[in-house]
Length: 145
Image (cartoon, rainbow, N blue to C red; front, side, top):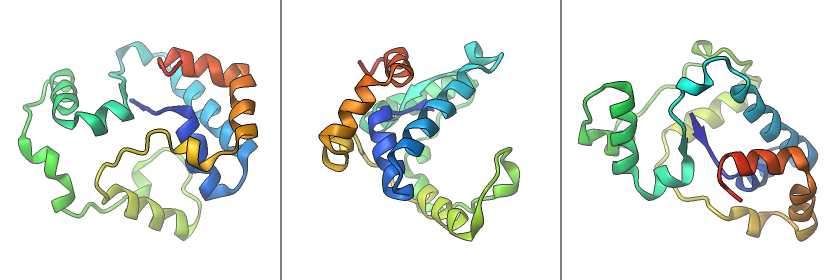
């Protein structure tokens, strides 16, 4: 399971949906959903920021957890185009544009989008996030505070 700083996720979702409240709710609900899974204690959780800053180390940890052999070609995944198969997911995929966005995203290099919220959210929006108890409880749980 990959977690990411909620402030950056909200900033990203706001750019896509142009709706701050929806974006905040979505991050909260998505994370509460996986945390409510009966098997959550068997999940290997990594932080997105750690993956982009130290991909070699994080991929080795993932492989160890999965009992799979690490292959250095994993670091060069972008050399092979990946086709997004929406029918393998158990979540609704809405519209052709969403599918095209996902196809684009999964074929991109990992990038460090840390602290984008400082650029993309207003001070008022950031203050609203900090005042949201559910949001801050999750941020604390994921060690972002």
